[in-house]
Image (cartoon, rainbow, N blue to C red; front, side):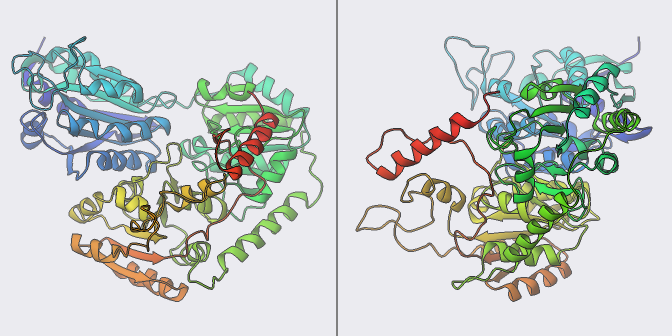
Length: 621
């Protein structure tokens, strides 16, 4: 057997460089490169391998470990999970900084490969710098923290173990039903140890991602139930976009006159002006979608995991006999809500269901203009909110309207947390698939700028916009520098509303007077954060990093800044001053949160009693 002597780190890179996938007959290089921040746990192992023997793998220098994993996840998401970046760090804090982003990827079913450094397997330098010592179990290290947030986890304590671990890692990373974070913990001494690896381990591997057809009996069961129902509603999730099934979704809906609502991950599956597109559903849903959901006798979930925001904490579906058909590549998700499970690729499943229902002559029972009337009412409401003026300055909904009208139909917006996801889910008018990039499975503050860089890395031909609040910017903006370094322009639209206003609104909506959520100075009189707003110059900060920047406070200034930003050749930030609390509220929706049963505040106790009443009316499964 022919062999080649390599260090474990060199062998890992050589292996990753030879991984390809095949989808619908198209072959694609799967691992594009490695994002990394070097430290004593990886600089002389993987660092040396990247410097001397990276092959065709590209290296991108991260600025924050969490940020670079967000960028890698966004890259994979924007590419419909067909390409990835690996991420390497040192041991200890460098490794643990990736845990939050690992969870974000796993919750959203996005493939990322994490390569944190680890303690010496030999245990000779003991304890090594940054080592976590657990006296009761000396096999535990900081990287064990990744077990809870990874779909596959392994620690390679001998160089030959790489061969098994690498193949298992690729199994998970290329399986649409299993995708998430994969963690290979790499002890720093083992990274540098040599082994005679078989040359066959480095042969080109093509992982075929087959479109999984539904079982014939599953199609029959689903079709039988649909034929019994008059008012079905389709909920399109992220699985529609990952399967590139927008055309099949439209054909299915049009064939039977079924309205389509969308989750955060599924938004842009159909254009906003499609006659059957009723918009966002759930807590952040439109009035049209939520009214239809309330009366629907059947929910057809396509590629959705039914989060509490999608189901309004299981209260969105009010019909006494409502049932569910769940089309999902993952049996874990297709079994939810006691539904009829169709475990299959979204495109294949929709095709099969279309054929079965067409043969049976099915049509939904919606009255003429019932859907169009609700859609027209909602479109008018969006027009009103987009044009809404405020006496104190620029409202958040007005700003979003100006942005929506001026960035272009092919531009990608990236967002994640705060009040903006709610407004964007309800109001944003997407015309093309994959132009709405929302991380709302984990709603991780700080994803936005890193995610925009990852999306721009995936589709450099599109204009990419990070849409975020001042709170998210302060949490994590480091990959703005990486976008400048890599020459991948993004435009950062920073809504300055002086704090964590989304949670401030939630807090006050459940009995609080408002506490600890605004960016105010501490008051000597109250000893609380009740002084004046802190005047933070975000535009100046962005300029100090090398970006271009503008500050706006009116709709006209925002429109002009957007036009100027398009002409810039480097990453640009627009600081948008908006009036706090000018976001949208709920439309026929409810969210289950814990409210104290006992409080010195009568308002809190009253809010708790109202919450209890709503909980009793929600579904239990």
